[in-house]
Length: 222
Image 1 (spheres, rainbow, N blue to C red):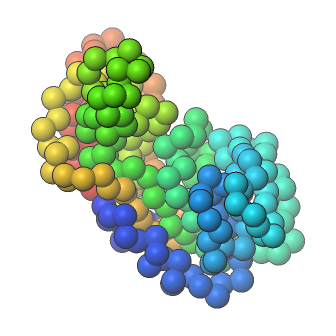
Image 2 (cartoon, rainbow, N blue to C red; image 1 turned 30 degrees about the horizontal axis):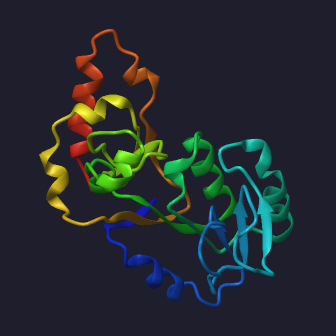
């Protein structure tokens, strides 16, 4: 169940205060952070954290079910984590369903953030003009270059839209509703309901169908 979705950059500190003192808190995908998070007792990521830590680290590609074995064995022995946090990570992974299903298998509840759709669909947020010139580009593109997904929450369900090339040509005046960069954050408990927009929707002989689908459903929800 998804709870308390919002578009803000302020929720993480509040969440860290709420979970302070819990005995088992895992940060999934947190190795690129700049500092140790006091409330976190374990880390899971493809690489070891860049900051010094004495916390337990599970080397895990969260897109690959085969690399979750070590964490699952730990959970079998010690029980589920009290809480998990996953901050600015899901937009990078190739297998979004794998990551979300395992999160709910290893922890009772958690907190997730991704870039807001208002940020990911806005033009010119990734590079300034100088950077575009260095990259031999002459116009702003939408969102952040390495991200694979655009997320929105509608009817307490997380929707994941593949970030396909045609979005560069869509007219989306509503994305400027939020004037500065923001993120989508939400708490969850027991499970994470989600819809992955996949080939069933996109591989359609009439190109207007998937484009109309994006226009309608990206506009809905938070």
